Image (cartoon, rainbow, N blue to C red; front, side, top):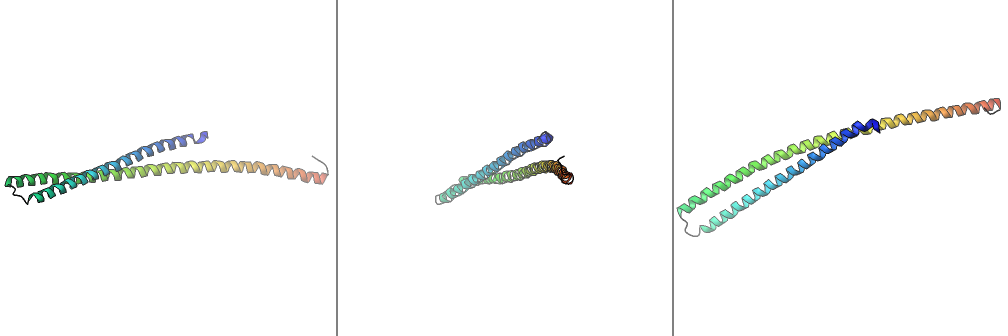
Length: 155
């Protein structure tokens, strides 16, 4: 109906915005999973390094090697700490994307509800108009029948 065109356009725009937010939300989920996978790789590598170091303890190791191992382990721990920050950042971005997506969903649902209620109001108005016409026709028919009965002739 042309009377609802502006509202239908608003719903179209809100749908596109919601879909764009859904894509951003999905990307935020992928980013978080990627960051968690990187963390798991770092932790796995740290575990392997520690296992090799412990296995190497059975052999004689120089002081210089111990020093290098501690430096390497410190850098690896620094990378793990940085990745913890990255994961926290990605989690915050995901939460923000989720909130924006929910807002878009609420806006779209509200617009659809407004359109539905306006269409229902127009249908109710149309139904009442049709009922009035039907009632008027029935009233005229009843009046004709009553006049025919009283006068005994057809009007």
